[in-house]
Image 1: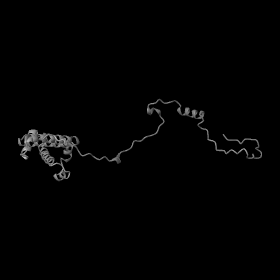
Image 2: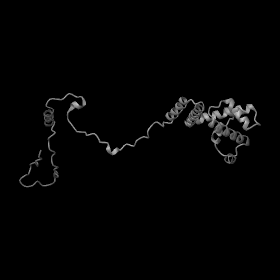
Image 3: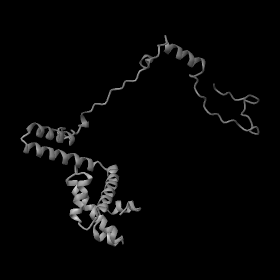
Image 4: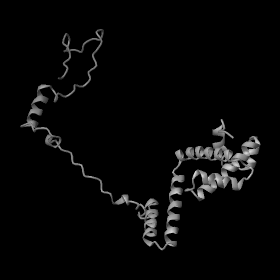
Length: 208
């Protein structure tokens, strides 16, 4: 049994029930293989340190009718599917580490090797961040905003001060007419309108 061409379909259906697979009208041969892969996956989760040969032997125990070549193909396909899962999550690596650490701890305790058992416990706690305190929630009400005071001192931004700056500003304002007051709006009379007596021939003054 070689690698299937529809690996994506295997990936999507790996954790579906047999009824769900049947509703999708998957071929019976594919359903049987998916159920074998799921059993192997469960076994591997419990014993992540098992090698390929051990996995093949386990599958032949569970499914005696399979040939050895078929078992190797199943293990290869399972590794491909798990590899795709690994790209999406670190749960597999975390489970493998914890399972290995647990086994080391148990073997060390059976051998009365308490130093190795203590190290396994320490590694487990460190990897799972059990030695870290829970993140404390900050009381934002205690945060005091910085006091910002406006200034016209150019030295605060790295510029050299100008002598008598205010006086020079006043001189420029006078020179450029910054203090001129805007004139009121005056409505000019039409040419046909008769000038008022006493002002005939004179233009009306417009205040500056």
